[in-house]
Length: 494
Image 1 (tube, rainbow, N blue to C red):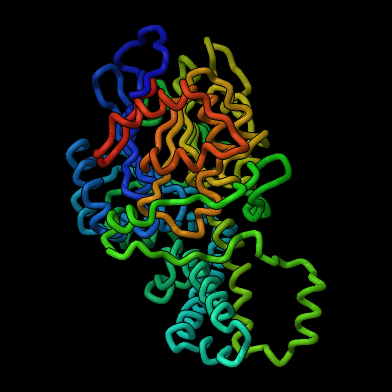
Image 2 (cartoon, one colour):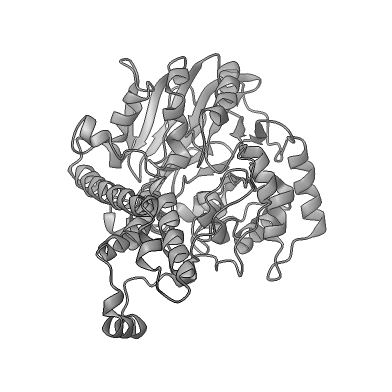
């Protein structure tokens, strides 16, 4: 277990360490935090429960362990955002969650039905969600009917044209699979909220207290968390920031080649028996919304090749914009030990617009009895634990406004990334070699993976990065302790 340097012994009434457990099966987030005063657990907190492509059998071992550790009672559940890789476990195992009790559930302000801006935002997302789902359904129907085989049967290299269409539809289908509330609106109300979902999942019961957190809030004297401050960083109230996913100098350059995984191994883990997979289109071939002379020339000279379903392909840019704006609605929190000022950072899947907004915030805290104004840079400078955002993608961690400011010598990180279950399209960006190599150096190897390090590390040690052997040795030693376990653990001391 990773342990940071001890500070002066505090009274047992005050939180002096946090045990962090990350559950592992595939790419997704599910954390159990135990805030301790000495040997006494004062507060049990769960953050998310999801895994992309995850099924009930994947989540059952997690929940068995959570129930055993907590006795079935959890003080606070934090739900960061609505993507499946963070919440589909709640749906898949709603009957098992009925056996757990949560005193409080924290959502971001974007789920507050008394907030007009949140309602407008959710209404817009709901329309985009349903439109995307409808387009994907129609496109999958065309594939099932072998529409493209018939459409291109007389064309040169028709097989490539057909596969190109299928690759696009497959990738779009993967993006669509992130969305959890495609049909809830029809069943309940026009604009579903996460409160609707979690009531449906048996999480929110009659006596569960639901709270909505807004950026700039400072939660002090939270019940069962003596000696801790909680800073609410995001999502931003300025909704124009939700569509900003990266900026020059603020994201890590994409990998030269997409990540590779052992498909035979993954097939054995997933139980499909064939070890095959479909390669989606590469991100560099996305046209985007800008003008293209090639596209214009093609449409003018090849109008005869147009098909009636072309309008469905606008769903590609729609899906990308929608998926990224949902990531930016992530509830981002920083937990701080009051005495030592050390910080644990959990940003969900926040992308650059969310990170950028943190730097417009300011809080006033008391240090040694005196008021002290602090900002995001202060929190990042004092970060000793970082849950790596968006599964080690190139834009899930800000560079200059994020990782560069993480300068504490005791920094430890956890990466919820696992090739056992991952969307094939994500292999273009996860893991980002530059980001991971930077964090391995900053932590001196105190870097935990939810997945198999022997598969992930070769995708980090590319030609454009250097990883010290001594750091890799520490990484291997720390992760090896949890080989074969359903979770990985580390303790962070105050």
